[in-house]
Length: 113
Length: 112
Image (cartoon, rainbow over all chains, first blue to last red; front, side, top):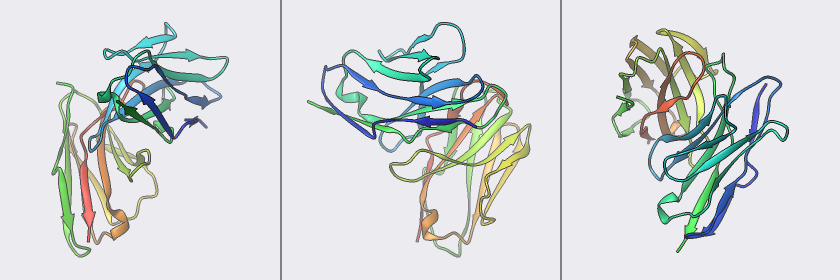
């Protein structure tokens, strides 16, 4: 079985500061890894994904995540955050052959001006 | 078109009402999902349809009844709900195996 742990339930940071949202997973088989973002009163949007290939994946709005197999981690980073990044961020895993996706408990990113 | 649409956006219903939530996608995905999300929690999977057949039911109470009329549409029929069923209901779609799920904006359901 797979599981996902997001170590921080809330991360407050100042605008233009760097941020890292931590995600660790547990699985006995290879998995796909995802970060989803949920802005207030909206559905989930895919931020970025790791399926295979390069372990560093980037999104169009400046976020990046690195797949680390030895540490079973997929931490999300951004070098300089904006007020508009205020949202809930969910890390998720999925076995390639499965339809079910396993979500972490979420990290609320709050940006202070 | 990479969009999943859901209607209505908001729904308020009494415990004796019957209502339906609707979801539509035109990405050619053959797997569709219903999730329930409570405030400050991750989405909880309710049902999965694969090739228009129900493949996963996560022990959801029978007052929730899913339906997949065709490969683009997914409905969730609601009857005799309880106040604790109030939540954001999310629909998603994907290819049946692998890749990401695309989520709709959700229906905010309030049961009085």
